[in-house]
Length: 338
Image 1 (tube, rainbow, N blue to C red):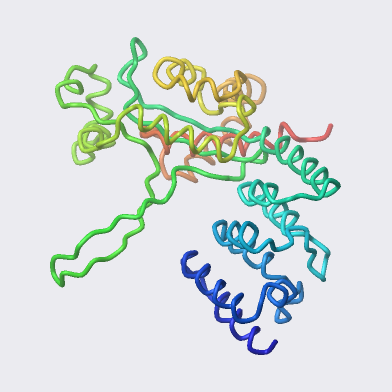
Image 2 (cartoon, rainbow, N blue to C red):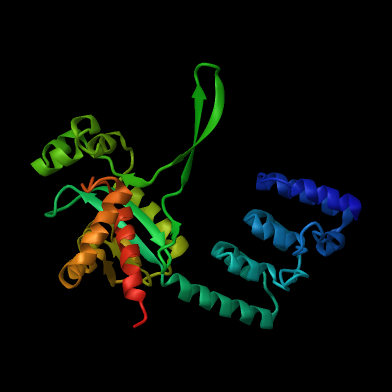
C-alpha cells in the first residue's frame, strides 16, 4: 500500500493531461488490480478521499468516464470524513457537467432517485441565473450586430461564466521556438467590410473610431475580426447551455429589451433559448431618480469613483460590467427586510 500511496501522490501532485492520467492509471490497475485501487484512500488529507473523489475535485471528466465505463468503479462510494459520494461532492462544488457524467453510471434505483432529486435542485438553482448581455449595433432600424458580450451570474450577481479562454500556438521568430499563449477574449466581434462601416451614421463614426482619434476602437476590431454572426450565435448558445436551462433564465442589462429584439432577428436560436422575462437595470435607475434622488446621486458618485470616469465607452463588456455594478448597488435596497 505504501508503494500505491507513492504512485498516487505523484499522479495527484500537479495538474496533468488527462490522456497521461489514463495511461498511468491503466498501468497501476494492471499492477495492483481494481480492488486495491478502489479501496485506496488518501490518508494525507483529513477528508480521506478515494480516487474518484480526487478526480472529481480536479475535474478530470475523461478519466472518470474511463474508470466507470472500463473498470466499473463504484460511483456510489462514500468518503470517510463526511460520507459524501463523488456526485454529492461535484454537486457541492457546482460542477454540473460532472454531476451529469456520474448520473450516467448510476444503476442503483434508490441512488438514482437521489440523483434525480439533486438534478431537480440543480435545475431550480440554475434557472435563477441571469444572462447579462449587451450588443453594439449598426443602428436601431434594421440593426446588424457589431459586437456582443455576455456575463452569466447567479441570482446573487456572482459571476459564473463568460467567453472562454482561447489557446493560441505561435512561433517566436527570434529563437524559432513554439510556445503556448493564453488569451482571454471577452467580447465577440463580428466582421464587416470597411464600406459597410463607412455608411454608418455620424454617431457611430465618432464613437467607434480608433482610440488614438478619441473613439473606442470598435471599427478596427470589426475589420480585423474573422467571426461571422452564425459563429457567434453558436458559441453564445454553447455558453448558455453550460449555465442555463432552456427558456428558464432572464436576460439582464441596461435597456435590454432593445437587445432582446435584435436577438430575435439576428440570433433566433439564442432568442428562443432565453426566457421571455427581462431584468432592465435602466428601470431601477429611473425609479430611484424619482423616489430617492439623494441616493441616486450617491450611486452615481460611486460609479464614477469605481470606474474613474463618467463617460460610457460603448464597448459591450464595459457596458455589462457597469450594469452589474449598478445592480449590486440596488440589491441592498431591494433585499432590505422592512
